[in-house]
Image 1 (cartoon, helix red, strand yellow):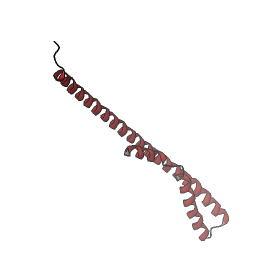
Image 2 (cartoon, rainbow, N blue to C red):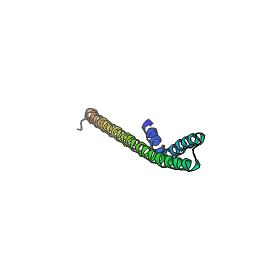
Image 3 (cartoon, one colour):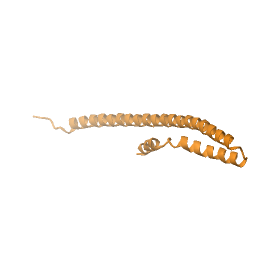
Length: 115
């Protein structure tokens, strides 16, 4: 079923790598920029440390937003799956009821009278 595959893909998304990726890449850019601008060593370390803290906070916020978005999508997919199962069950019950009525009328017609 296609929805089962979609639900599994939503579960498999790994958002734990978002924060380290943001922190490392952005801090590397800041460090390279400050190195080529020939900042003094003390200022260089302060700027790089401050950028680590700032981008760590930004990465955590983005990770929480992604987790919330994925949870909403997962809940939505589960609700759609439950609705599809409910509709399928109702259709099955309607078909059984319809076929049961047909069988009763056929039994009445086919059964020969007793003498």
